[in-house]
Length: 264
Length: 368
Image (cartoon, rainbow over all chains, first blue to last red):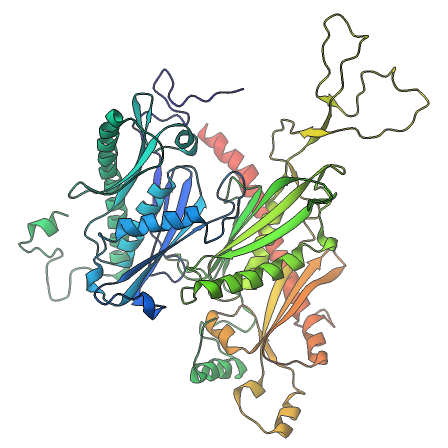
């Protein structure tokens, strides 16, 4: 019987990564269907597609809130996303829980007060799962919201962390998630505040602080990736739209006294 | 699914019935939008394909997009179970809410159920059943699950579903299995007292037990194993037979105007205009669609695997026959469109096979 080591003598994990190494992350911000904003994010072998529609008129009047927008999250998991095929109905409890978690993560971040009585729909589609599902969903949702042009207070970057005996690990695969106590942390990198911390396993209290800090730092690394992806997508669009120096001879870069904005 | 006002409907219909006919994107009546196909998109599945019709090549948006994947599960054949000796096929279609953003979840479920029943009834027919889904006769067989996920719908979803299903089934590899029989250790063995496990059912170590005159060879395999092999398995049997679907959207002059009964009776004599690959707007403007699924078994035999009339229009039987069967080789009808689609799809699937095996190997050699 083959026993796969979570962390071997040389400091390598089962998929060849080091302890604090994150998986390969790819971000695709091209348009999907008729969505206002969409993003496909992969963390290693976990692929998630998120489409955002909105802000638009609510489908059901009863769900509208008089002073802010209603955020509606629906998650669909493809039957072929895992190793063994399992058809999950849309009302599955685990999926509803995932959707509710994503909604509560983004409620304080999206500036909903700008769009009263309207609805923002976030449709998450999981195409392939290999651990870190909530992390991938949150990262993809952030990017899709940014892509849709919905005002946010900040990016939300999520990462999973775990502890294998006393060694902390980051960005766990499915194999590691099943074996090791793990926590998912979502942070807003500008302020460093955590907007989601969720753990379903048991972890010793002494280990928690270390892994929490590490995950928060890893969130900042992911933020770097997301920012550069958004930048390159925007510069592509600007190039395609043919924006350049205006005929009136204005400056290429609009410099005003707003340091914080220009530094972004 | 899209709701159009009467003015928009009549605008679209007038364009289609004009001579020369004009469509919003400048296509001819029989032109398809560009179709993109990729196989092997879900590595955890036994076969998969992603197909998009009319996807904008510059930014990748819009269009109808569908992902199909097949997964094989082992099923036991019991009296109360659902397993059958020759295996089973089950098809499911699920629609992402992003494909139909204006629909409530109950309407979405309705659409899912419609598409699932159409796909399942057509593909699970016994004439298309692959013959290599048995593992152990009367004990274990494969259940082939075909899951199709609709990511976005910009018209012509049925053609896309069937094309993607055919591609995923073409790509499916059935793992090779080998029957295994357990034999109790014999007393006459050497002092080591070894047990015979994992004996191939064709070899019998204890030939003394069986008389030389006994010509019966009953399969006694009770379990199976997956031998190590360099590929994923053998291809699904009968993969040439999977059907190709074509949807003919029908518009006739009587749909555009209100006429007296005499005029209506007269206009029934003229055959309706048909066009292919409707966008969502055009679909909403054509009151009747004829869905045909053709299977091209060999070079000669063409079989109509399934047919549906969708919508609220009407069609006389003679017009129906004209639209289905090719009376002459050059007549433009459903069967010929399906054949062209079939040829094009096969060419692409062969391309994909080459890309994933031969070319991948060449690329690998370059990097080494």
